[in-house]
Length: 241
Image (cartoon, rainbow, N blue to C red; front, side, top):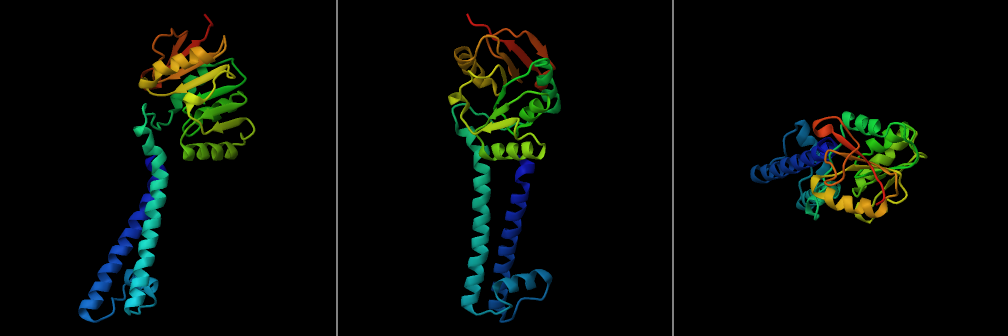
């Protein structure tokens, strides 16, 4: 997330610096009865205000431009940040944490020899979905509530020539039906696993392979455990009672 937002943060910092410097230069001109100095930053700011003219209407216009640009940048940054911050306000916080290369490899190992349709719940930036598509699963699908991550995933699918083999759904996973999927990957948090286990028992078909990443399902017994630490995945084979 830090890398994703850094260009916007740099832009906002630059605009705030320009606005602050401009206010200082105008105040100096007013107090001393002289134009601002001719340094590079001063000349750039004078051009924004109107080629160094210092009448009050042009000063106000220049200030409004700077304020408008700064306010617009702040608004854009807020729009970008909101989908990343809002998970903390939900009943179960599901933050964006990208899968490691080892986690992706362990998921594919757990599903070795499998094919057909697959869905990743909480697909984030789409790396598990894209890797599954490259491994032969089709269609490979992701469910993610963050619109920016869904957009990013679709762009990555296009760049890798996987548009026709993949699909990304901007959906609430609790309202998303799991019935059509014989292969399911879960990338969640510990607090959601018990409730998700109940959803799986109600919706999935007999023989469905379920891979849980980072946190196991609380009462189901895995048929295999692959990896260690945060890269651990648990494989379950669902059987109807």
